[in-house]
Length: 594
Image (cartoon, rainbow, N blue to C red):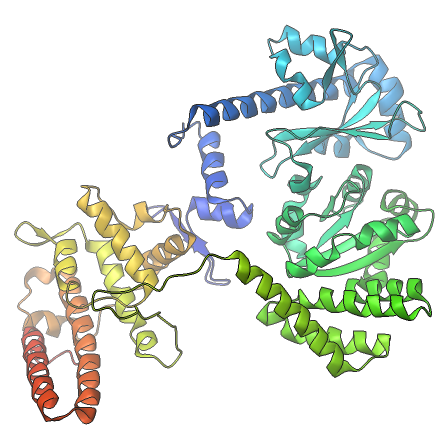
């Protein structure tokens, strides 16, 4: 359901809801700031940034310039591939021989850097780009006092960030050329960090989310070939060890990671790198080894799409068990090396630390201890020992936490969401108060007083208990006191994801009036069926009655344990509570009972 008037959506199938920003965050996996900037760019809206120091402003200026240089260069390389005789004869013919079609080359914006040493550098200078920034891009270098193109006679693979901007390039030699390394990549700079990027993620993100699986390969051409074959949920690591940032990028879209590498020793070694990090991040990792002499690029070209899919499905191996298999093979009959294997596997399994993965960890312990032919109980103890050591190290890094003390000198209680607590039972009542505040808060209540002011006054003595609701109330009150006009529409764009979800849920929650609504309003002498006025009165007073009920119960518990003098004091408290209850129920007649 989409509500244009409220600028929100709600899927009653999966429960997802939000506004245009949260939709982009969910669908594209953008951060809040990324989603805001995307929308601003889409509709040519200038986004006001918070104050930045001169250093930060300069850094942003450099980043913007690097984006501009990369954007221009990407277009230049594509033009050279498709429109120049040199590009067509050398690069395009080579790519076509390898089976790449025009549409896939355009999808990945593949290009060509010509042989002339000033082809790109000259074009950049002619278009007024700052030469001082050229070395940062890696595209142009200074040799013998002059600017020289760095990627000459190479096929160019642009590298995009998750928003689709070109942040770097991979330059590949054509064929078996001996002109330097097979690949030259962009150096680290203000916009490119290879440890935080996966090639093809921009093109693959939707397919990964849909398939709930990410295939990880090594090379650029592996990614392009698989996409051409219709297998689009694939990205490349560039042959480097997986980093924590890359794994978290994958985890934004799926927890299922399948590594598809060459089956030779180098491929196996590369595949095993980063395993512990993947386990620690909670990813379920599988491994597929392509037959010897092949790589994903050549193999899918050789066998076709369906055969490749079938092979991947059938050849998947559990990553942890495969690692153990390789380690045991390497250890042979050497007892010291076998002992090292036991410790290494225990340390790996100790990193499966999420509560929801406990059963999976126990199954790994059972299988690994059987394969290593050791006692399962002893291996469990070893895993737990590694886990305790890790926790101990992490605790030492943390500063000592100080307990928050309230006015009476007592430690402030921590709110716990006990399934049997009164808090959970009354959650709907608290939530309804917030709904009234968002929906009617700016409307008049009595004279110059608004409904928001009426609710603020009522909540001075009777407090909300859910911390998230308290936070939303505080945000509303703060905006209101500043003279702003907060409501469900403005607060649904707040930077806090929990606040946004709560506001959207409140804005969309159906509020059906009681069948006895007319009777309630008649008893309360509400004229002209002023629903907003009545909604505020009923919601706040019903909330107060529920709070009083809890106060009565607590007072009775204390009275049962108190001495005579204390009982006299508690009886006075009881009478005061009864007077408050009488005042509230009189406003309802005898219609509403808690």
